[in-house]
Length: 200
Figure 1 (tube, rainbow, N blue to C red):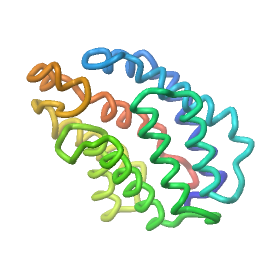
Figure 2 (figure 1 turned 120 degrees about the vertical axis):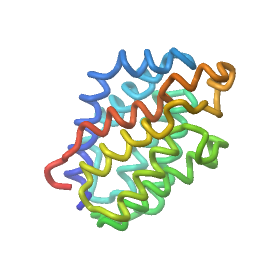
Figure 3 (figure 1 turned 180 degrees about the horizontal axis):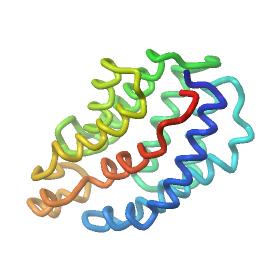
């Protein structure tokens, strides 16, 4: 069950992992982009945690705070996608005090839909959207969140090894991207290490 307490715990642990993986995120991103993915993720999560005392029982309001945090601290395209995802999630969770399994599936489906539309990408382009899609499929079969998040994000990376990244600046590198992980997919896999969260 996802509620204020669990969400608070999740974002604290995400920040710890973002600090630990800061250099790795930037390095993976530098191979095909600006090399600022670590900056984007860390600064966004720092701002969320700076405002975490404002979290209430309204899960929708909490995700809106997260959206505003990423808007404030990240001007990158990835940060903008995260901000819009949190904003749209906040709308579907308005005035909900806790989220059941179906709500958690809805959260990921909303994030996927937002990234596909706002990022002007599609499944198969080798982006974080492909990781989210696999998470959703596995969530519909299992409520073991820790296992789902870790296995789905790892499998997504493996499934796309040897395939080109077809969106963003990476397109300029053409076949070279077959040898690289997509930075967003890599980051999501690393962030999945924060689970299990005891009360989810």
